[in-house]
Figure 1 (cartoon, rainbow, N blue to C red):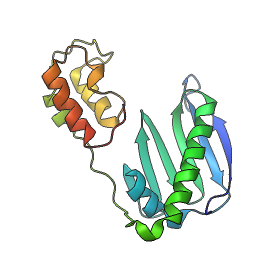
Figure 2 (figure 1 turned 180 degrees about the vertical axis):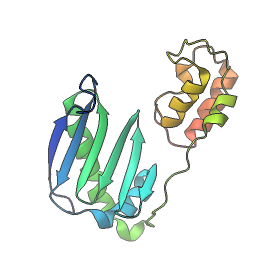
Figure 3 (figure 1 turned 120 degrees about the vertical axis):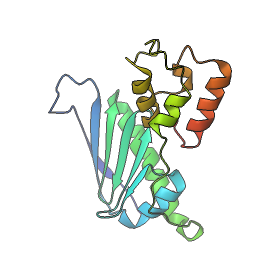
Figure 4 (figure 1 turned 90 degrees about the vertical axis):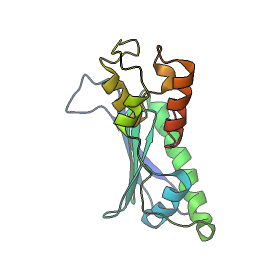
Length: 174
């Protein structure tokens, strides 16, 4: 087992105290830097930073960054989410490390969805039914993994399938 434990700190952003979401920084008891390229391969990191090594994941509008000695998670709704994510990552880090002989390590980030490609698949009516002020903003939010095809009410079935197909290439779990 590479990662045995961590200490977590939950807080609200100091720069904007009215922000409702929580953030978490977990200090790792062990350095997991050597496992990061394997974790990146297994989980398909959104972005990989080489110096210092870190892998960034995007999930449901939040960023999860795994560094050698810490994990940062933003946009948490409740504190319990942090514990679940940290325990999941601990398991994934340890499994990737244990199976590293079978995994081709990667220091490349995943391909990213293009905002204009998403916009082309939308009705471009700026109706605001999705809760966003424009289809362009919706497209940007979809590229971030915050919005999905189901979040656009006027999208017809065929267009919805095309958008779902496009977004599915990028493992966006909305």
